[in-house]
Image 1 (tube, rainbow, N blue to C red):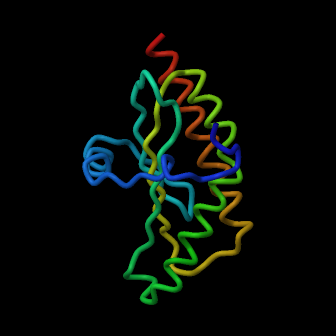
Image 2 (cartoon, helix red, strand yellow):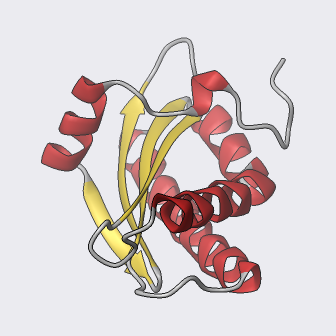
Image 3 (cartoon, rainbow, N blue to C red):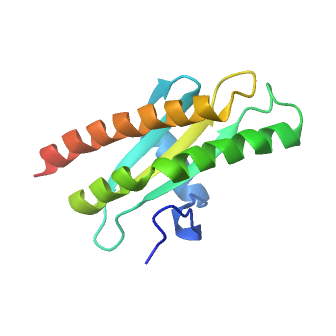
Length: 135
């Protein structure tokens, strides 16, 4: 059983093939400072989200800064993913998500939390419409 607030190995999007498919056929939206690219897939065995995060090298030259922003993004997702995970379990779908940080400066963690909360609410609404279409 996965930890409710953990972010384990199975929840990280690592497959180059899945990432390419996500960007080729996925949909996206922006809640400043986060751009979300997502794709829902029906799955017989696993019903969770796999996520990836990225930060522009153009705006953050130092790897230390990019890593800090990625840590903050993952932490904001990890703390608020429970409702989305429950909805995915209920609808028997798997989600591939990619979070892209678009701001040019490092924001406070509160900004990350509120933006991630808005992103996850929007994803839940989109998941509900996808689930209604498949039923």
